[in-house]
Image 1: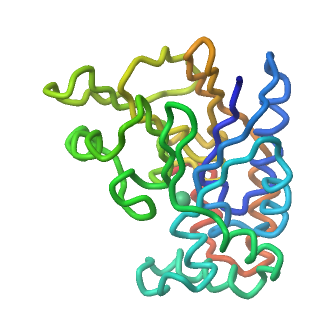
Image 2: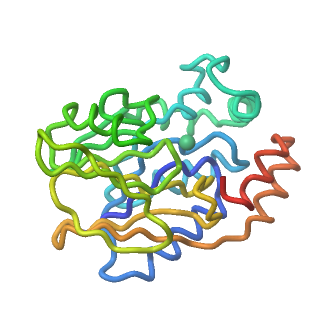
Length: 246
Ligand code: ZN
């Protein structure tokens, strides 16, 4: 089975379309989609993104911290100024149908030999795995060979061969294919707001049979999204950062 792995779409419909178009051209075709949370927040198209993602085949979708903020589950004071403004805006425009979909999402999941969490297996919604130390602490928090996370918006891979060794980290720059070998924590990066200085939308294609992880990037019309953000009254800084990819 081939799985399209996406995360942190952040209500960026143009980036989501670009990723789906790019993934559709890869063969063999993907049969399932795993979405690691933060469908909304920051971007101008929360309802449209929810509608598209919920219609994708074989969907496993998690809730993220920004989804929780949009639902009023997390107090907005936990967010910085811009994220809070975007969350407040999202709360206002989110339809009941979108809210209902988001509210029903789990914070983690397990499929085959993969554990899925937005942030980390230890703290599914909030913890960032950015360094080998945090990765090490999390390797004992899941039992499967692999764990997929989002949240940091950085394509990253952490590997730990044996229980008594230390995790090695590797930043995944651009497009590459990585062979899976137990055990690993992998992050596909962010569709809607990449933060690794590469503004192209990031995602991954996971091949369960060949045990490979293909990191992909898809360019999209950033100006188009920026216009919608500014029109909606979303924070200008959040629109500007998309060009630089941070
Ligand atoms: Zn996010």
